[in-house]
Amino acid sequence: MQNLNFRRKHYITLAIVGILIFTNPSRSSFMSYLHEDDSSGAGRDFNGIIFSVYSNEKLTEAQIKRFLSGKNVSPRKVFYIGVLGNFFKSPFKK
Figure (cartoon, rainbow, N blue to C red):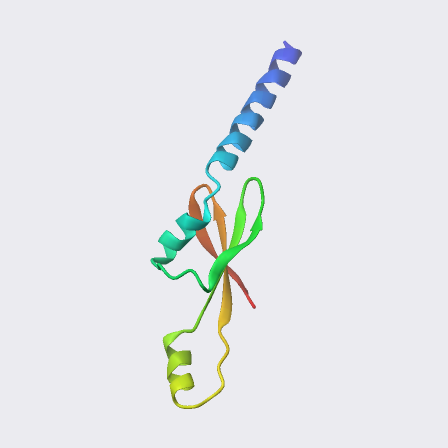
């Protein structure tokens, strides 16, 4: 009976890990999430087995206005975590 419970726990764990691996989103899914065709500032920074870390480096509208007024502006890198086919914006910025 104890061996059966041990096996059941292994099967459940393998099923969960398998679902996470199968639903790890791709770079094209990330571009679709951003609604952008131009991929110059976006990419995958880390590809884990069960999740990935993506980043997007674009200027905001306020930064574009500052740039047009002649000020020096650098884009801010925003990170996203991709897991289970979804993307979550990370609170960390570079």
